[in-house]
Picture 1 (cartoon, rainbow, N blue to C red):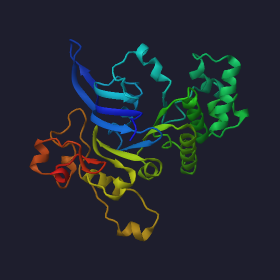
Picture 2: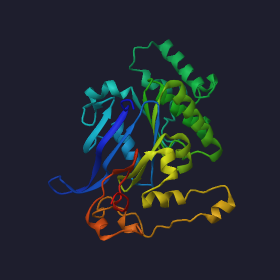
Picture 3: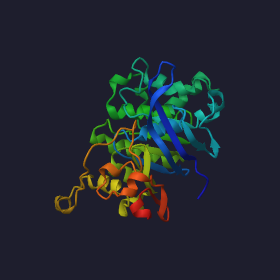
Picture 4: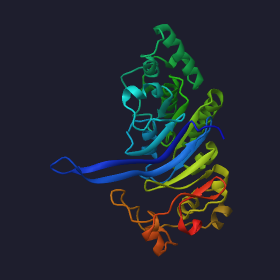
Length: 324
């Protein structure tokens, strides 16, 4: 294996909830708590889990929209977790983000040309060179030259997301966080956007963190997958290994909810129903965070937090029942 383009080591991201009269936080919301994984150059790492599990926060922490509370974020071997803005400048160009909502992530008062060119304003390119670069990007993502002077409200959701992709590509990044880039789109458009991302990855040697709750799409686009629950990574493995040999009870429940197009197969599948609600990350359970909803939980699960350990080559799981 080559050196990872991106690696997180024990990444933590806590947010203060309420403050005392002295200004100290009353409690901490542990959105991301001790998450570790690596993304190889030119590959896609899929991050899945229920809404609120911390997937998006991981992505935002990696590109330093948030300053991590603890742990490391290694970009090409350099820890950027605590760098200030001046120190981050050389890395900003190489990391970009495609946001979930193409309706909210584009400035409605700017033309498509201005939106895509914005990351280039501080480059050494002349106005004519920026214009030519925008034309290249428009073509690269499957839009037409006459779209350049239009405004976001004149486009469909899929076209707007292509504008967002073009904007992310403007600075020639090496790594892109795709934060649920298809969840706000019609099903008929989702495959087109995914195909565009895959084609761009092959052509430009891009690396992706693909955040999604669409498990079928994650299986299609990813090389490796991590499963998160309540801020923690509970399972991580190469994509084929994970989908064929799920080990964590939460992963099994999550996968059992994926719809299949074959009615006979769907009728024969066992659907795993989890009891209770997801606990609050402000006051997570002691021990294993999944234990309150796990049908196999033991006394040890309540007392000891399971570590992410290698149960099979390249397959890591945080579960006492699997690791012994």
